[in-house]
Structures are given as C-alpha cells and as structure tokens.
Image 1 (cartoon, rainbow, N blue to C red):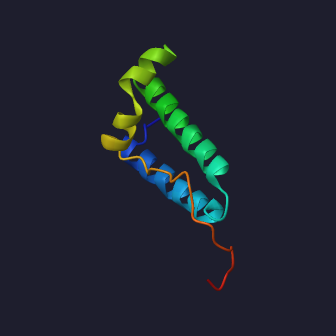
Image 2: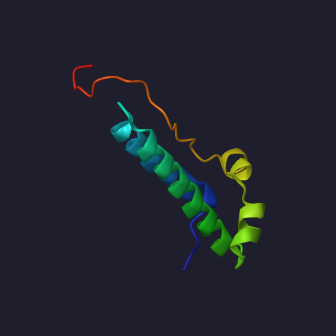
Image 3: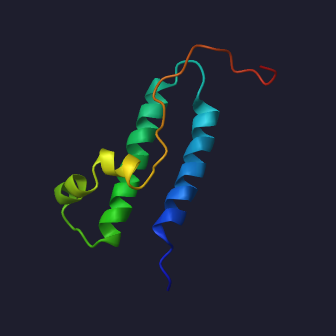
Length: 91
C-alpha cells in the first residue's frame, strides 16, 4: 500500500471545504462554519498524528497547532462569518 502524499491530501480537503463553504456561506451561517472549521482542523490533526505515529492527543495538538496547519500545511481557512444576503441563484 502506498501512502498518499500529504500535499495531495490537503489539496483534496481544501477543495471539499471550499465547496462546503460556498454552499453554506449565506445569511447567518457562523455556527455552521465554525463547526466545519473545527472539524476540519481536528480531522487533519488526527491524520497527521497517525501519519507521524503520535498517540497522545495533547502532543499532537502541540506539534500540529493551528498555526502549523494553516502555515506549513496550507489548510484553507474557513471564514466563520458571512454578510447578510439572500441566497438566490440570480445574485
């Protein structure tokens, strides 16, 4: 079994997250987007912990902090607020 390169994993995650953000990013979406952001960060951190064989969650959080996820691994930063606008296909 060949391990998928980490850059490809992050690229696929970013594409999926951008799609979700595009779908949910209207009106009062801050709760949904905040949940999505936390979930994506935790899942990538879990993936990195397994990849680097780090069993302790605290150690994994220290090693793969949010700064590292967004800086070194170039994870897409989910906006947690949106302006109030109508969700309409023609706008």
